[in-house]
Image (cartoon, rainbow, N blue to C red; front, side, top):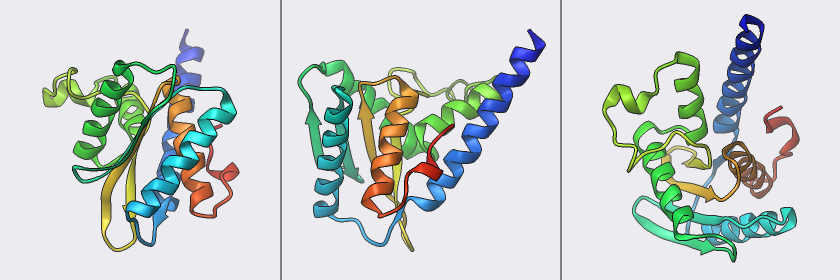
Length: 172
C-alpha cells in the first residue's frame, strides 16, 4: 500500500510539473475572436479524429467567443464546462492542476475555501488563455472525455495552434 501511495504521489508531482511547463509555454502573442474561432475549430477537429463527443467553450472574460456541443453530448457537459471555467477563473491555473494539487495535499482547495461543488469542480478540462504582457484573458474548456484526456486534448491543440510541438508538453 505504501509503495502504491509513493507511486501515486510521484505521478501527481510529475503531472503538476508538466502542467506548469504547459502553462508557461502555451501563451499567445494576442488573442481575439478570430483566434478563438480557430482554436474552437481545431478542438472540434481533434475530438472528431478521436471519435469523441465534447462540448467546447472558449471565453474572453464573460464574452462567449466559441461554443459547440457535439452530437453525443448532453446539457450536463455544458454545466461541467461552466464549473471547470469557474475553477480556472478563481485560481488562474488549469482545472486539472488545481485538482491534482488538492489530491497531493490531501485537502481539496474547494473544501478549504468553502466553494460550492455545484459551481466549481476539480476536474480537468479547462485551461487559462494567457497572453504575453496581459496574463490570463479568458478560458478554453472541453468536457466529455475523462478529465486527463480533456486536459490533454486542450494542451495538444493549444500547442499546435501556437506552432509548438505538443509531444514534449504532454503528460506522461
